Image (cartoon, rainbow, N blue to C red; front, side):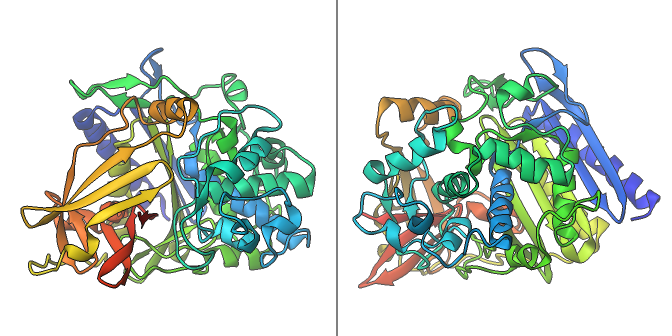
Amino acid sequence: MNNNALHTAAARIREQAAAYCAANHVPGFVAGVHQGGEQIVVAHGTANLTTGAPMLEDTGFLFGSVTKVLTTTLVLQQVDKGVLDLDTPVVTYLPEFALNAPGAADKILVRHLISHTNGIDADLYFPDAKGRDALKTYVAGLAGACGVLFEPGEQLSYSNGGMIVAGRLLEVVTGLPFPELLARDIYTPVGMHDSSTSAEQAILRGTAIGHFPDPETMEARPTGMFTLPDTWGPAGGTPIGTVADLLAFGRTHLAGGVSPSGTRVLSAASTALMRQISYDMGSPNTPPMGMGWVCYPFGDTTVLAMSGASPGGVSLLCVIPEHDLVLASFGNTPGAIMLQDQLLQWLLTEHLGVAIPTLITETEQDVDLTPYVGTYRSDQLRIDVSIVDGQLEERTTYEPADPSQERVFTEFAGGTTSAPPQRYVAIRPGLFAPAGFPLEAFDGYLRLLLVSYHDVRDGQARFRNGGGRLARRA
């Protein structure tokens, strides 16, 4: 990356961020790119509307689910040491691990936890516990609260529960609390000098908070909850850091597991394993899954990516091995994901010269919709699918398990857990797009907005897939 190209990229990100944030009520945004030994970081706007603190290049933010790639790296470090084996059942190391379906947990292997193929139905399970025993409390609660969506390895469904169980597994085999392990074995050797594992640490330096759009005015308003409970640490609830720190982590994966300072963080074999496809649903709305990384195909170029929602914010980390490039960014409203998608596509097409093929070229009129009609469920979520005016219509209802989880999820969602009915147009049998979107909107990261149905038996689909998450026919 020569200085001219670097200067152009920085100017473009600055211009695009300013325009998008102004038009879409995003208070602040920060992004960085590293390529070929050069690095830029661009910050715009306000980190916290309550205090008026500006978004700076070194402002911290919640990693959200980007943490899952860090957790996966920690698991594979223990595999490198011979402490863990990917093909051993989790219960061998963690005998107390159980689900409410008898014997179901016994079949889950370590690899299923970090490849999102475990089937644990716990996507909205939010036990509110703090401190040293938070993950122990989470795992103990699974036995009574959560079942399975599918047999391990049978399907793919984005799994917060799998990553949290992996975090508890790490605590048991290393003897260290997850936050201490993260700081010792990732932050320190990678050189993530401004990263922390708790709000108590983050308050000592400049840190952004999330914001949600006011339902009436769409103006951004500060979140009422900074982090998720400690029980969600390994899935992304609590780790916090800067763009430069995430770029350093991404560079470690670019360099086959060697940090920018030259420290070996992960073996070359394990780094490569994280990029290998663990499961491919063969559906455009769900990119193939590696271990920790989601492997987005953009034509012949693969983008290793993970985005991370936090209360009122969204982060993104992308590693593009073919072009020696890392992108990291954070915006402090949920809508910032659209800006992140625009910037990623600009970097691919204009900066790197990657041709992005059109993912969805046309819709189909004569698709039989009846196999998809019915009620689908996952943890505390019900989705009713019907046919209205020749289109599929989905109504999603949150059905909280208890008042504590309802409080956590409601705050995480910005105060509202109900959504208006959503209509979908058929792209082909089993694949649908939200009505009203131009088809080119799905070429990038927003392909996750497409909905697919899978495993049709006796004229009925068994699974609905939205955002990479499965719900099972009730």
